Image (cartoon, rainbow, N blue to C red; front, side, top):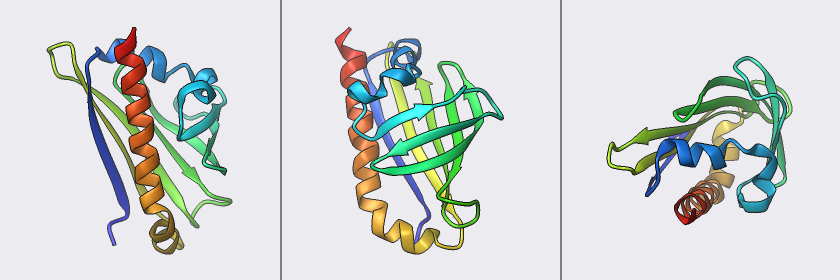
Amino acid sequence: MEKSIKTEIKINATPEKIWKIFSDFKNYSSWNPFIKSLTGDVAVGNKIKVVLNGMKFKSRVLEYAQNKKFVWKGNLFIPGIFDGQHQFEFISNNDGTTTLIHSEKFSGILSGPILKKVKEDTIKGFNDMNKALKELSEKS
């Protein structure tokens, strides 16, 4: 079984405009149907707490490049059980639009069985978040 998920959406806005909404983590609860909260000092190497659909993950920021990319690696309970490297990449299409690639790679001894149970809901969650971010970014 493939232990990764990748979604993609084209947004009619620049990476800078999208990033402004995306990186306003305090307001996630008002618009984000997938990530209910993201707290902590978001900087490379720092720990953050991510809550998605009732699951809480302690995560470490691996990359944080303004207007371009945000990557964290989190785990459920303890590292090595069910870990995920979550990534958002904002690619300018050089025409005022942006392609958002929202993906995650899973590892850990229970990643296969857990992912089998949550994969469809996770894909739906990624797509729901992508669509919500698209709608907000294209409104203003």
